[in-house]
Length: 134
Image (tube, rainbow, N blue to C red; front, top):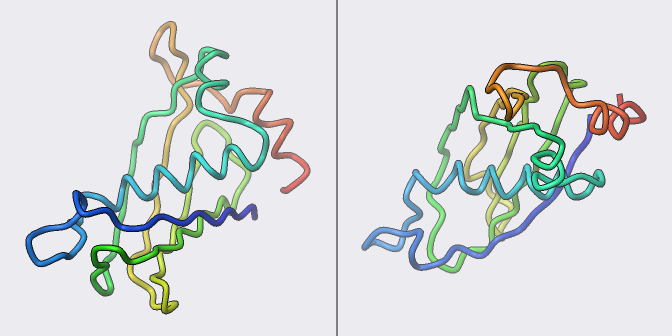
């Protein structure tokens, strides 16, 4: 299992008139978590794309426990629990500054070759970085 922690302060544009975060923003928070996770292991989306790999979202689940509000500081915990094969699953939990669970969910992405838009196995460069953790 490999974990990453990211934080973000809720911006006004992410909220509705009541100052509550719109639910459409949670997948964006998940994306922040997974891009930071990749950086922490020594990889980036840009590097993967340079290798000819794309990672489309194929499955997304989100459960809401309580609202987040304008100017809350959110902590996004991102986990990868299993060694990826042809897809990778990121599990996320989001807490507010008081430590209350706001949201949890997961996002699953497939590895896809950019040249032919076909599924592929985990790229060797990423596999080599992850093998020490699993």
